[in-house]
Amino acid sequence: MNKGTDNAHSGGLLIEFIFCVVIVGAVIYTIWRLVVDGFLPQPFFFEPNDTFADWFNTAYWARDRGTYDVWGSLYPPISFVFLRFFGMDHCYPKARIVESSPGLAPRECDWLGIGSIFALYILDVVLIYLLFRKYEKRNQLRAILRTICLGLGWPLLDGLERGNLVLVSFACFLLAAGPLLKSARFRYIFAGIAINFKVYLIAAFVPLVVKRKWIAVEGIVLSTIFVYALSFAILGRGTPAEVLYNIMNWSSMATVNPLDLWFSTTYNALYSLVTTDVFPVTLLVGSRWVNVLAVGIPILQHFTQFFIVAAVAVTAIRPEAVSNYRVINLGLMLALITSESGGYTPVYFSLLVMLEPWKGFGRKWAIISCYVMAVPLDIFIDPITQVVRDTYIYHATTIMTFWLTLSPFVRPLLIETVAIALACVTIREVWEDIHQQRWAGRSRFRHDHPLLPWVRRPPSPPLARAGRGDDLSPTVDH
Image (cartoon, rainbow, N blue to C red; front, side, top):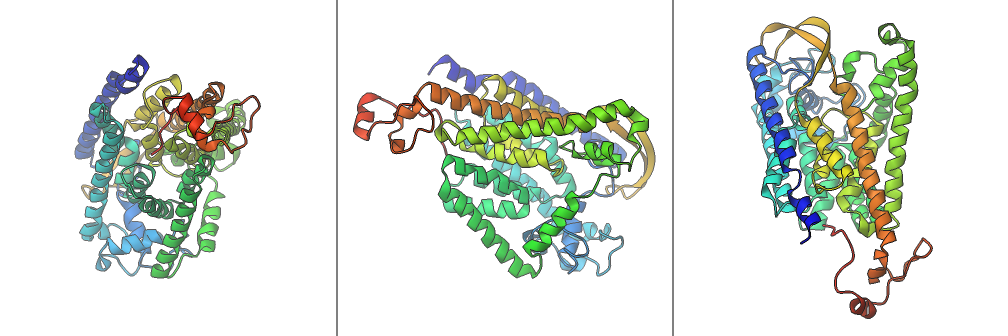
């Protein structure tokens, strides 16, 4: 084993250990603040009485026929079928206290729902560790450190605090994209379930066509359709037209409140604020900054999208040079930087980034950025206002301060730089594969067109075995 391989297995452990100490310390501080104040500090959700609301609001509408025409849900039917099974019907009122919520009563009554939220979170952490342990067979310490990053990091904790169905979707995504399941058919099924819980995950698996994983993509698409049809038959509502209409309607809505920046993972909300008249941004920062943001945000987004598309495109030239999880991650990040999907979504691409070895600037930057985003703390810039709120934990009334913080402005930039870094690493890997004529050692592609000039064709199998002693492919796909 050469020195470079040794460094890839053991390098960066001190840096990752320090980040994990910071993450654990931040979690302890957050718990202390929760005990003292009765609510979670920023960057967690700003309404202290809205804890677990994503679960219980959705669970209420699973029992109300106005799921799509009244509430305007973006979720396919499987979310509501799932919550019907993991909830107690008698805990949900027949009439809503407010327009979209059943109030706090179900959270006090539905112990099955509360228990399911924490059970799913624990399942996610266990699966994360099992996956990293399988990848990091030579360095179990790194598997533990990266489990801490994802399991105690802000994105997954945000999903836990919200009671979001990302807890279910993430487990299915991990089983579909990772090597924990030996059966390809089971991986296809879990991919279909994950996509039905979070529609944007379809973007993660479609790019596998450039890896010539035709059967895998077909299996995932068929599984997605089957899961949708089955859940629709059980629920009895939620046609594709209804879901698509609600998604398009939600996407066209402009940001009307600076608090929408609170947990943003893209600059879409900020761009909406500076290009509309719903909030006086110009009076606060001046017209010069408004013009800079109005021009710069789209340029940055399109620049990142270009790099991702270019990386996926060049992968088609040398599919063996790029790992499966990298291609999945590029497709996923293209979707996540294009539309706002919530503060918990970095947990998906962070999982795949943490499968990267510690080598090269691009990979190291992506890994460190995911560690930074995992820290469940924020840096306060300036107070916005003080408000009176009721808390869910203590059932008390308290005064809390909304702060303008740093993370809504830094987090989207970090995500886009992670995407650019992985795209650049991918393009470099393909170029090295071409430059070193590695295709000439892959006899199974001897009938393919080389696509590029001056590329040596692979020889027939007997000649290939005679001419080389080992596989020249730099990547072993799972």
